[in-house]
Image 1 (cartoon, one colour):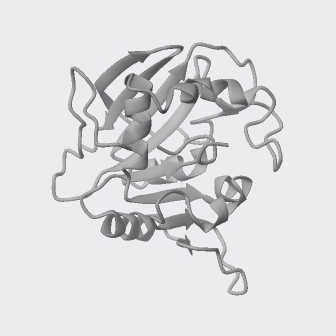
Image 2 (cartoon, rainbow, N blue to C red):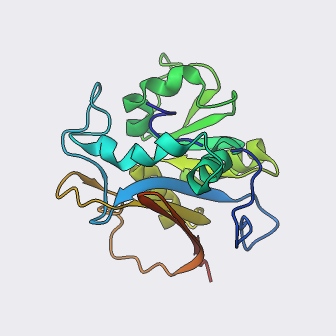
Image 3 (cartoon, rainbow, N blue to C red):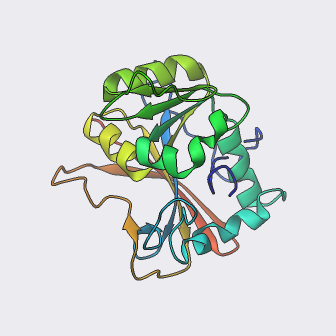
Length: 215
Protein backbone atom coordinates (compact mmCIF):
# COMPACT_ATOMS: atom_id res chain seq x y z
CA UNK A 1 0.00 0.00 0.00
CA UNK A 2 1.06 3.59 -0.53
CA UNK A 3 1.55 4.91 3.01
CA UNK A 4 -1.19 2.59 4.15
CA UNK A 5 -2.91 3.38 0.91
CA UNK A 6 -2.90 7.01 1.73
CA UNK A 7 -0.63 9.45 3.26
CA UNK A 8 0.59 12.26 1.21
CA UNK A 9 3.37 16.71 0.01
CA UNK A 10 5.34 18.87 -2.24
CA UNK A 11 4.74 22.52 -1.61
CA UNK A 12 2.32 22.96 -4.52
CA UNK A 13 -0.60 25.34 -4.56
CA UNK A 14 -3.67 23.98 -6.33
CA UNK A 15 -4.96 26.22 -9.05
CA UNK A 16 -7.84 28.42 -8.06
CA UNK A 17 -7.59 28.13 -4.29
CA UNK A 18 -4.78 28.41 -1.79
CA UNK A 19 -4.11 25.87 0.90
CA UNK A 20 -6.47 26.76 3.74
CA UNK A 21 -5.24 26.74 7.32
CA UNK A 22 -7.12 26.67 10.57
CA UNK A 23 -9.42 29.67 11.16
CA UNK A 24 -7.72 29.92 14.54
CA UNK A 25 -4.32 31.07 13.29
CA UNK A 26 -2.82 30.56 16.74
CA UNK A 27 -2.94 26.78 16.43
CA UNK A 28 -1.64 24.25 13.94
CA UNK A 29 -4.23 22.74 11.60
CA UNK A 30 -5.35 19.15 12.17
CA UNK A 31 -6.70 17.73 8.91
CA UNK A 32 -8.33 14.41 8.08
CA UNK A 33 -7.48 12.88 4.69
CA UNK A 34 -9.83 10.15 3.50
CA UNK A 35 -10.69 8.49 0.20
CA UNK A 36 -14.40 7.71 0.05
CA UNK A 37 -16.95 6.22 -2.33
CA UNK A 38 -20.00 8.19 -3.38
CA UNK A 39 -22.12 6.10 -0.99
CA UNK A 40 -19.87 6.94 1.96
CA UNK A 41 -17.58 3.93 2.34
CA UNK A 42 -13.86 4.26 3.14
CA UNK A 43 -13.09 0.53 2.95
CA UNK A 44 -14.74 -2.54 1.54
CA UNK A 45 -16.21 -5.27 3.76
CA UNK A 46 -13.98 -7.66 5.73
CA UNK A 47 -11.07 -5.27 6.22
CA UNK A 48 -8.39 -7.14 8.18
CA UNK A 49 -4.63 -7.71 8.20
CA UNK A 50 -3.63 -8.82 4.74
CA UNK A 51 -6.77 -7.22 3.31
CA UNK A 52 -6.47 -3.80 4.90
CA UNK A 53 -8.80 -2.04 2.46
CA UNK A 54 -11.45 -4.75 2.54
CA UNK A 55 -12.87 -6.51 -0.49
CA UNK A 56 -12.72 -4.19 -3.50
CA UNK A 57 -11.66 -1.29 -1.25
CA UNK A 58 -8.53 -0.73 -3.29
CA UNK A 59 -10.76 0.85 -5.92
CA UNK A 60 -10.92 3.94 -3.69
CA UNK A 61 -7.21 4.54 -4.21
CA UNK A 62 -6.87 4.20 -7.98
CA UNK A 63 -6.40 7.96 -8.11
CA UNK A 64 -3.02 7.46 -6.46
CA UNK A 65 -1.81 6.13 -9.81
CA UNK A 66 -1.45 9.83 -10.66
CA UNK A 67 0.35 10.73 -7.44
CA UNK A 68 3.71 11.37 -9.13
CA UNK A 69 2.25 13.50 -11.92
CA UNK A 70 1.96 17.26 -12.23
CA UNK A 71 -1.85 17.21 -12.21
CA UNK A 72 -4.27 17.86 -9.34
CA UNK A 73 -3.96 14.42 -7.72
CA UNK A 74 -0.17 14.68 -7.72
CA UNK A 75 -0.40 18.05 -6.04
CA UNK A 76 -2.88 16.80 -3.43
CA UNK A 77 -0.61 13.84 -2.71
CA UNK A 78 2.19 16.35 -2.29
CA UNK A 79 0.24 18.21 0.37
CA UNK A 80 -0.13 15.02 2.36
CA UNK A 81 3.57 14.24 2.35
CA UNK A 82 4.24 17.77 3.57
CA UNK A 83 2.45 17.13 6.87
CA UNK A 84 4.52 17.39 10.04
CA UNK A 85 2.85 14.81 12.30
CA UNK A 86 0.27 12.03 12.13
CA UNK A 87 -2.64 11.12 14.40
CA UNK A 88 -3.95 7.61 13.88
CA UNK A 89 -6.56 5.42 15.45
CA UNK A 90 -5.27 2.20 17.02
CA UNK A 91 -7.11 -0.06 14.58
CA UNK A 92 -5.72 1.77 11.55
CA UNK A 93 -2.24 1.71 13.08
CA UNK A 94 -2.36 -2.06 13.51
CA UNK A 95 -3.91 -2.74 10.08
CA UNK A 96 -1.11 -0.71 8.52
CA UNK A 97 1.52 -2.88 10.21
CA UNK A 98 2.35 0.08 12.44
CA UNK A 99 3.99 1.59 9.33
CA UNK A 100 7.16 -0.05 10.65
CA UNK A 101 7.51 3.01 12.85
CA UNK A 102 7.83 5.49 9.97
CA UNK A 103 4.70 6.85 8.29
CA UNK A 104 6.67 9.28 6.13
CA UNK A 105 9.92 11.20 6.58
CA UNK A 106 10.18 10.11 10.22
CA UNK A 107 7.43 12.47 11.41
CA UNK A 108 5.96 11.70 14.86
CA UNK A 109 2.96 9.34 14.95
CA UNK A 110 0.45 9.74 17.79
CA UNK A 111 -1.83 6.73 18.15
CA UNK A 112 -5.15 7.21 19.94
CA UNK A 113 -5.92 4.12 21.98
CA UNK A 114 -8.15 3.13 24.89
CA UNK A 115 -5.44 1.17 26.67
CA UNK A 116 -1.66 1.25 26.85
CA UNK A 117 0.30 -1.89 27.67
CA UNK A 118 3.61 -0.77 29.21
CA UNK A 119 5.29 -3.80 27.64
CA UNK A 120 4.07 -2.85 24.16
CA UNK A 121 6.48 -0.20 22.90
CA UNK A 122 5.50 1.10 19.46
CA UNK A 123 8.27 1.28 16.86
CA UNK A 124 10.13 4.29 15.54
CA UNK A 125 8.47 7.66 15.92
CA UNK A 126 5.14 6.29 17.17
CA UNK A 127 3.68 6.67 20.65
CA UNK A 128 0.37 5.71 22.25
CA UNK A 129 -1.91 8.39 23.75
CA UNK A 130 -5.19 7.75 25.58
CA UNK A 131 -6.55 11.31 25.88
CA UNK A 132 -7.90 12.96 22.73
CA UNK A 133 -7.10 16.55 23.69
CA UNK A 134 -3.61 15.64 24.84
CA UNK A 135 -3.06 13.77 21.58
CA UNK A 136 -4.08 16.82 19.56
CA UNK A 137 -1.83 19.10 21.61
CA UNK A 138 1.17 16.78 21.24
CA UNK A 139 0.65 16.49 17.49
CA UNK A 140 0.26 20.25 17.00
CA UNK A 141 3.44 20.93 18.95
CA UNK A 142 5.36 18.31 16.98
CA UNK A 143 4.12 19.56 13.60
CA UNK A 144 5.00 23.19 14.27
CA UNK A 145 3.96 25.29 11.27
CA UNK A 146 2.99 22.24 9.21
CA UNK A 147 -0.35 20.44 9.10
CA UNK A 148 -1.18 17.40 11.26
CA UNK A 149 -2.60 14.52 9.21
CA UNK A 150 -5.32 12.27 10.63
CA UNK A 151 -5.72 8.59 9.69
CA UNK A 152 -8.73 6.45 10.52
CA UNK A 153 -12.46 6.90 11.06
CA UNK A 154 -12.29 6.31 14.81
CA UNK A 155 -9.59 8.92 15.38
CA UNK A 156 -11.43 11.42 13.18
CA UNK A 157 -14.67 10.98 15.08
CA UNK A 158 -12.94 11.31 18.45
CA UNK A 159 -11.23 14.52 17.35
CA UNK A 160 -14.49 15.91 15.97
CA UNK A 161 -16.35 15.23 19.21
CA UNK A 162 -13.56 16.93 21.16
CA UNK A 163 -13.54 20.00 18.90
CA UNK A 164 -9.98 19.29 17.80
CA UNK A 165 -10.42 18.50 14.09
CA UNK A 166 -10.03 21.61 11.91
CA UNK A 167 -10.39 20.37 8.34
CA UNK A 168 -11.67 17.36 6.40
CA UNK A 169 -10.22 16.43 3.02
CA UNK A 170 -12.45 13.95 1.22
CA UNK A 171 -11.16 12.35 -1.96
CA UNK A 172 -14.52 11.43 -3.47
CA UNK A 173 -14.19 8.54 -5.90
CA UNK A 174 -16.66 7.85 -8.72
CA UNK A 175 -17.88 4.49 -7.46
CA UNK A 176 -20.63 2.99 -5.30
CA UNK A 177 -19.15 0.22 -3.13
CA UNK A 178 -22.49 -0.88 -1.70
CA UNK A 179 -21.07 -2.15 1.59
CA UNK A 180 -18.06 -1.84 3.84
CA UNK A 181 -16.86 0.60 6.50
CA UNK A 182 -18.30 4.11 6.61
CA UNK A 183 -16.48 7.22 7.75
CA UNK A 184 -19.01 8.68 10.21
CA UNK A 185 -21.08 5.69 11.34
CA UNK A 186 -20.32 6.11 15.06
CA UNK A 187 -20.30 9.90 15.31
CA UNK A 188 -23.64 10.03 17.10
CA UNK A 189 -26.28 12.75 16.97
CA UNK A 190 -23.91 15.71 17.34
CA UNK A 191 -24.68 18.47 14.80
CA UNK A 192 -21.48 19.74 13.16
CA UNK A 193 -21.44 22.52 10.56
CA UNK A 194 -18.84 22.47 7.79
CA UNK A 195 -17.68 25.12 5.33
CA UNK A 196 -16.54 23.93 1.91
CA UNK A 197 -13.31 25.75 1.09
CA UNK A 198 -11.90 23.86 -1.90
CA UNK A 199 -13.07 21.69 -4.81
CA UNK A 200 -10.49 20.16 -7.14
CA UNK A 201 -11.55 17.96 -10.06
CA UNK A 202 -9.18 15.23 -11.20
CA UNK A 203 -9.36 12.01 -13.18
CA UNK A 204 -11.83 9.67 -11.47
CA UNK A 205 -11.85 11.67 -8.21
CA UNK A 206 -12.97 15.00 -6.77
CA UNK A 207 -10.81 16.38 -3.96
CA UNK A 208 -13.00 18.25 -1.46
CA UNK A 209 -11.87 20.27 1.53
CA UNK A 210 -14.17 21.29 4.36
CA UNK A 211 -13.39 23.49 7.33
CA UNK A 212 -15.03 22.42 10.59
CA UNK A 213 -16.93 25.32 12.11
CA UNK A 214 -16.22 25.48 15.82
CA UNK A 215 -18.40 28.54 16.48
